[in-house]
Each structure stands twice: as structure tokens, then as C-alpha cells.
Length: 58
Image (tube, one colour):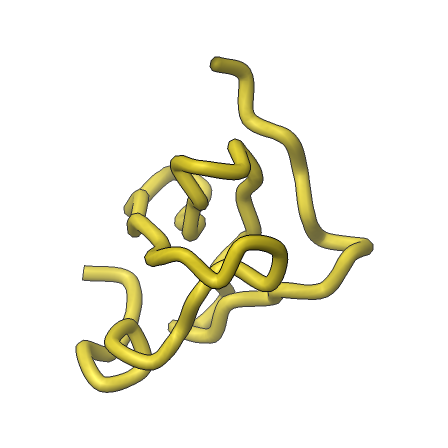
């Protein structure tokens, strides 16, 4: 598990507000399956800023 369960329960995609999926990596990331975007997780903290966002290929 990449994220603390409490943190995972309150986080959502900054674009669609939908649930995120964890991917333990490497590198560890959180993904939005609806928006097809991903953000890195560093030391258990998702870096959900535009500079860190990357598109996922369908």
C-alpha cells in the first residue's frame, strides 16, 4: 500500500473529483482511471500539482 488508508479515503482527482487508484510502481503513483492522469507518491504523500501530473495512455 502506497497511501495511508485515511488519506486514501479523502483524496480525489483534482479534475473530476473521482476516486483514485494506487499503483505501487516503480515509481509509486496515484491514477485517475476516468481522466487518465497520474501523480507521483513520495514518502506516502501524493504530489498532486500540475507540474507533477502526467497523462496515462489508454
